[in-house]
Length: 461
Image 1 (cartoon, rainbow, N blue to C red):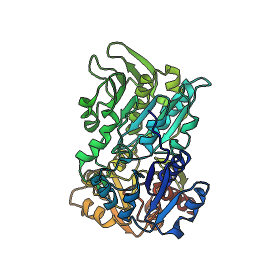
Image 2: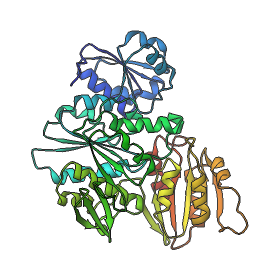
Image 3: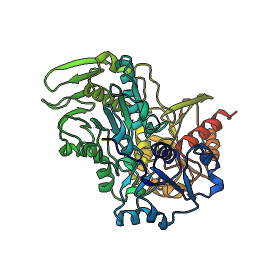
Image 4: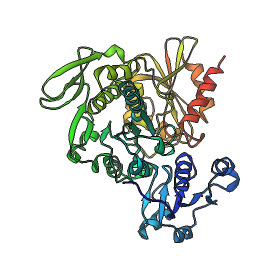
């Protein structure tokens, strides 16, 4: 049911991408909007210009509690923690909290496919979007967005009841949501964002919201080989479709791989979909992303040809194991999206060549031990940089007698790390920029970090 925002007094926290979209939507729907950001007014000139056509009141330079005295709602951008004193006070007062994804789910007139997970969300969402575009015939249209690209709340008035939305959802968005998509996929749940959620239990509970509000008519998609995702199977109210490399147990619907072929089963009858070679993405984690996309496609009743069309020819999303350059016999890969050690582990498993690994950024209070073990087994040279450099160096530990030799070098930032990697990489090896930490010690976001890495690698001569 659509909410009537007319004359509602709404405080929006955060003037980044999501905050600006919420402000536009709510002001267009005749709400009285206050946009609050901790940055000073002079740092927000561009944002103020973008919103100049609407009567929005700006409060900058902090988050004064008095703002709560004059509002009915608090809308929270993804980067704003729920531990912010203003948010804590809003909860105490019983003010309703919402965000752009919740408002979108209340407004959207067509079915929604929602995709979450600790890793692989953007790749899987993009694959499902490509499948949907291949499956739907005009005038039906597929809309792809959420945690990627432009927030779809900017386009919600254009979406028709016969369309289909494919929505990437992060734990930050899900923790406030009380609507679930008709098709909801959980790709995996591994330690991530513990700087935000504090505990794995809280992080998992946020992810579980994607299933929590489904009905018995809806479909859940779970990774049956991931303990975190599979742990949510008790939340399922409707139909279950699973995915994994190995075949599911009898009676369980899902996708899997056998004899270098993607297969689908309804639990009783199996059918081949297409050869594994159709998938051009590197690494087992990307095989799982493709299997997840196919399982979602089955739930959405896409024809088999559309499943293949979505995966065929897809070479990946920027900043995700992206080949930047081959220089002097060395391949340089940009995996700036890796903001947790688990992501770096998945990236490392994608390579059999000798590896120079670039690690660093800002730590998210996540364990580095598993990655440290893999480094001792697989990596020839480690370059650490940024705020987390010393923590990572300690986690890797000294070279022990009888173990595989490797070198470790500490750099101040990414640019220095690129130069250091160029000095130690030898022909036939790979330089893998898969930091394992966030970008905020040096850059605005992982995309800016990846762009700068690209520039510095291309400038090597």
